[in-house]
Image 1 (cartoon, rainbow, N blue to C red):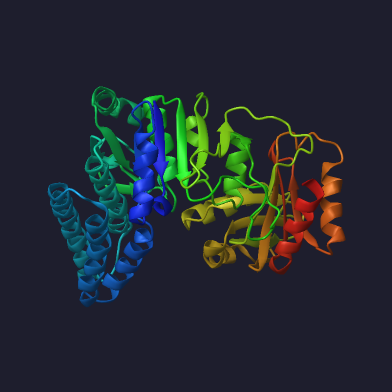
Image 2: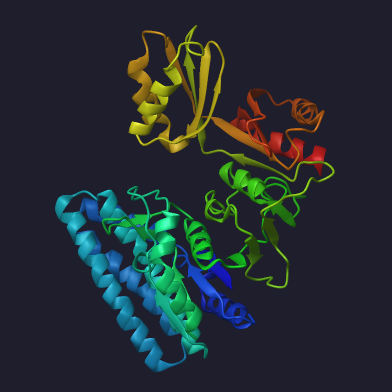
Length: 454
């Protein structure tokens, strides 16, 4: 059985919906489909939440725009009047629930994590209704399923949840049986699940990739296809390097590192549920379905020149924690980690020396991180510096850690481009090496590395 995930970029017009339907129809074996929200809707729902926090008067305009976006799309793309009217009725029922949630936010003047997650889930709920109806309109049996109602149980983190895979597999048995026995193509909502208490929990932006992998895990699928409006993973960001080329094959580890360190093709956690299974993941271009895309396999291969891709992340910040004994005194890193965890901050990486602990965090968490650690100064910690105008550059490839002379080539290439390297981490990962440069040098560093290896 194959699971096919379609992102928001595949769901935005009559032409793109028709292309999705054509791709699904071409499958020899009935697939399972997982969908994101219609293009732009998640951002609009976020704006609607902010609007409701400011004034109840903003709600009517938000709902009108949401209805026009979804019902307007239905009127354009569907031929069968009965299916069209049934679909609009279902959309209106969903929008009434959104209205109640936004009204509750307006009354309190604040959106809790629970209400925010619940509102955002409607992007996917409405998209699944539309796509399933569109497939029926085009002569295919189809039914939409909501992920919080099919046993997709997560932990209690409402906005960056992790699926309890064992619990999910137990809960999913009846749904999996129904999917296998039914003639209808299931269209499952991505991006969210539910906590053990029944609250809606979300997986963060682009979390539908992760949802689709969980569904593939639950069905023991043979393959997971991630359909986007791009060709797949590239040797570098084409916006920075015009000569970037598509990567045909990656390992789970390589794809995970590239996603974690800045490539936006795949959600960083997509491959977590698939470890230990023989499920291949393929990134496919909606507009070039005949192209093989990028295939991600459990086991990788060593390329002659080792490096398969160079990527960058500009949305990071660097915290430098200074003190003559910070790298030696027991418990300091533990205390730092506990304080940042309590503040809801994820640490990308830690590099230590005797006199400095260097932390990489998300740029949006930079100020919060600094403030959370500020009261630790005055003892072993003398001062904390925060650098926000930096970029993380990563080189990824199987065999990177064991290849002699590779680091010399990398940093020689960067040095020749007159780029100063502020911090280096190599050896922590089997397949990735990364370093920090001034943000102004991002393009020079990426171009220099790509020229050296490609």
